[in-house]
Each structure stands twice: as structure tokens, then as C-alpha cells.
Image 1 (cartoon, rainbow, N blue to C red):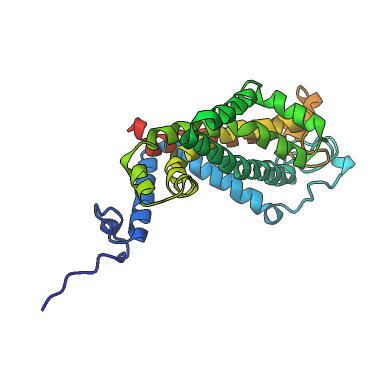
Image 2 (tube, rainbow, N blue to C red; image 1 turned 90 degrees about the vertical axis):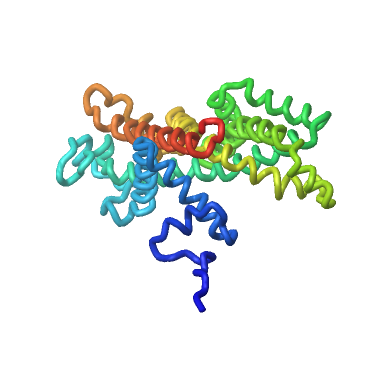
Length: 308
């Protein structure tokens, strides 16, 4: 007697298992959604370009010790301000340090700051927005007025004020950027929460006896994640620019740290003579920020239901 095939497990190379309209398991549903996101993202060449550029920048930053034999802090005054050559592919700076090694190691600092900031502000903004949107009333007004106060100041100016109140350095820059970057995520999460808090799905959760904390944490916050991911990806470029701006102004990473903004600050006087010294870290900031913008636009088209 013949038996029906087991569709609860994937077959090697089978798209049918991933694209099934009625998933048999939770794993199949999760991977099917991820595969559909990839298919939608793949239709946008700029988004794919941004994705691979971001991955390449992250990879070369992590693998910096294996990609260059030069110490980013080692000075060689006999070879200062050399043009790009076979010995130094991107030239040297005013102290004879290899620019390529400083760009690679600087990516660790700049992107590390961005990742830490996102890890702080995304959960914080999501929690505040969901609590305000679900609770409503006085609590909503208090939380949103605090959010409005932070939004009333330009991010860089407010970050400078926080760093000045602390002390210049990477830790202070991360904390300052995090304190100024969470309000947009809170506003977005609040708007999403207000759209779903009156739905039958949430009403059914209340009828089962779920507490408000459980409803917010287990049911509402996951629904807000896709929109938050899009906003985070689009906001990555502004966080990178803010971190580099703090370094350029001497309030972020301090010399001789190979942070991209600090590199531009120390080399800006050579812009019209040895132009490659300040231009190369500026190009690194530009390319990375542009890649995140391309990726964010593609994710918005795929994840945002209003764009479909």
C-alpha cells in the first residue's frame, strides 16, 4: 500500500517545501518566510548590492589581522605621506602609518560602535513604544512627551552635549548616540501597537487570561519587529555618520585610534596636497552608509505591507 510523502521535512534543494502555502511545522513556516524575504530582496539589484557590500565590510573588518601585515599604530616617519604603491596599497598618513591597515582596523571600531548602539536602542525603543501604545492614557502621554523632548534636538548636538558632560572616548560616544537614537524607534513601535491592540487576536489573548506584560512582550512586540528592522537598517547610515562626526570633532574615539572620523580629522590639512590621506576614510564612510541605505530600501519594499 502506498503512503503519502512526509512533507514536514525539507527535501534537498526543494523550493516546494519552503514555498508551501500550508506549513506543517513551525520550522517550515519560519524558513519559508525567510526564503520569501530573500526572493523579494533578490528582485532589487541595489538591495542585493548593499547586502553584499555590508557583508564584505564586516568580513574584512573582522579579518583585518589576516589581511594586512602592518600594525595600524606603527609609525614610520621615513615613509610618511607616501602615495598608494605596491608596498602600501592606499598610501601612508602623516606619521607613516599604513592607511589600508588603519581603514581595516577602523572598520572594527566604527561598525562595532554602530552594532552596540543598535543593540541598546532597538530593544529600548521597542519596549517604550509598545508599552506606551498598549497602555494609553497618562503613561502614554508621559512617555511620548519624553520622546518629543529628545526629538526636539538635533541628534549630533544632543550627542555632543552628552559626551561633553561625560568625557571624550568611545564608551561615552556609544552611550551618547544610544541616548539620542531611541526616540524614532519608540514612535514607530507605538504607532504599530496602536494598530493591533484592538484586534481580535489581542482580544483573544486577554480572554485567555494573559497579563498586559505578557501581551506586550509575547504578542505585540514580535509584530513590530519587521518595521523596526527596516527602520534600523535605514538608520544605520546616520548612526555611522554620527559616530564618525564625534570622532572628527574629537569627542569620540581618540587618536591614535584608527577610527574613520578621527582619521579624517587628523588628515584634513592635507586635503589639497596629499588628498588620499583624508579621502580614503571618507570613502569608507560613504560606501558603508550608502550600502546600508540600499539594503534598508530593499527591506522596506519586502517587509512593509504598505509597500506591497
